[in-house]
Amino acid sequence: MGEILTIGEPMVVFEAQESDVDLAKAQKFQKFSAGAELNVAIGMARLGHPVDYVSAVGADPFGVYLRHVLRTDGVADAAMLTKPGLPTGFYLKQRVSHGDPAVAYFRQGSAAANYQPEDLQTVSLTGVRFAHLSGIFAALSPNCLAAYRQLNADLVYNRIPVTFDPNLRPTLWDSQAEMVRVTNDLARYGTIVMPGLSEGRTLTGKQDPEEIADFYLQRGVTTKAVVVKLGAAGAFAKLADGRKFSVPGFTVPRVVDTVGAGDGFAVGLISSLLEGQPLPAALQRANVIGALAVQSPGDNDGYPTRPQLDQFYADHGLV
Ligand code: KDG
Image 1: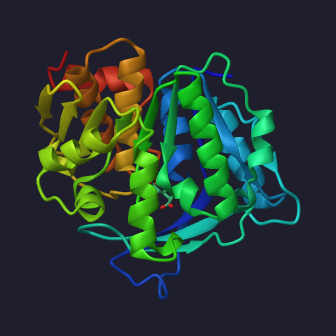
Image 2: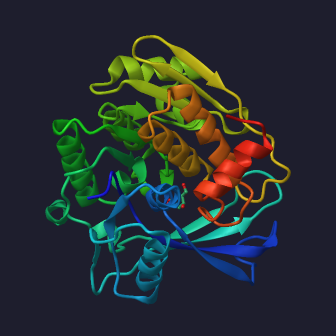
C-alpha cells in the first residue's frame, strides 16, 4: 500500500451558493467531495505522497463521482469497496459570512457505515509509514467502531504511527457521555493526538491547551505528542518528554469556509513529519495548509499542490 493509510466515510457535499441563507431556503448548491479522512487523503496525494483510502461507497452516481475524484487526485482506491444496494452519504453545507456553517447530514445506513471488520482483509500494512484515524469513522456504527479498533490494533502491533483527530460529530453518537468515553479511549492509541481547542475542552473538561495535552499524555498507551489546534491562533504541541511548542497561525484576506481546515492542518503535519522535518516546522506547514483551506468553498479544494505550497512560503518569507 502507499506510505499513508486512512479510513473514513467519503461523502458528497452540496454547498449553498447564497450567503447566510437557511439551508431549508437555499436554492443553488455547488457539489464537492468531502469526508474528513478523504480530505486528508486528497491533501497528501496533492503533495506527492502515495496514499491509500479505505472505505466503501454505494453503486450510485455519488460513489462513481467520489471514485473519480480520488483517482484524479492520485489517491489509491483499491481498498474502497463498492457495496451495491447501499447509498453513498452526502451532506448540505451553508455558506456563511462569519463563523462555522450549518450542516445537514444524509449518511445514516450508508455504504461506509456498513463497512465490516472482515472488509479489512483487502488492506495490507506493507509499506505504510503513517496512518490517519478520526473519531468520525468510529462513530458511524458498531461495525465501523469494531473495524476501527481492529485496524488501530494492527497499526500499533506493526509500530506504524497514528495521528488521531477526535473530529467530534455529536449527531453521530447516542449521547455526549458515550462520545466522550469512546473518543478518549480511542485517543489512547494515537501516537499524535490532535484535538481542536473546543473539542479538547469538551473531551477533557480542561480549558487550557497545555492541560488538554497533559490529559492525553498521561492516559495515552502509545501517545508521544498532543497537538491542540487553535484555529487562526495557530497550534500548541507538547511531547511526552515535556518539550512544548507554540506556533502562530496566519491572517488570511477572507475566510470563505472553515470546514476542512482541520484536515488540511493534518495534511501539513503528517507530510512534514514524513519528509523528516522537526515538529515546529511541521506545525508551521499545518497552519499554512489550514490557512489555505479556509479561503475556498469546498472542504478540500483549497489544499495546495507542491508548487502552490512553495509559492505560499515564498510569498510569506517562510523557510
Ligand atoms: O472535517 C471536514 C468534514 O467535516 C467534512 O468533510 C464532512 O466528514 C465530514 C463530517 O462528518 O463532518
